[in-house]
Length: 104
Image (tube, rainbow, N blue to C red; front, side, top):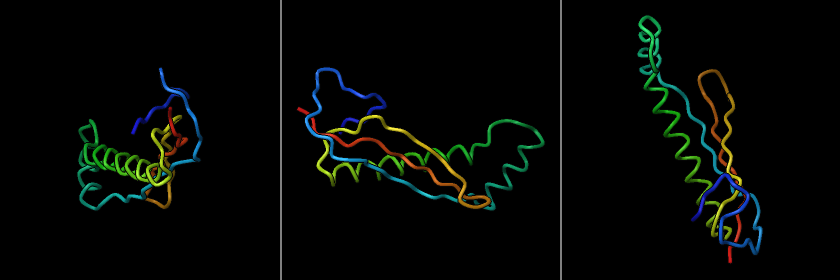
């Protein structure tokens, strides 16, 4: 599966647009990560627990998008985008989406 943020793929022709492939996940931070983040507020620096949580969330949303595209019979996903939104205090959604296509 080719995944790209571009509209085209060099030396490939889009023969069919299959639709939008999407994948999302909603994650909440934990009490433990909040405690560590609170300590970091005193000394500064990266909030590693939150960075890891966001990275895992992005990967899961991307994999779900790929799974959705495979169900459509896609060879590639073009114009891939990631968005995030707050669901409730302490929880957010990561959404990955793009155009599922068949290539020649």
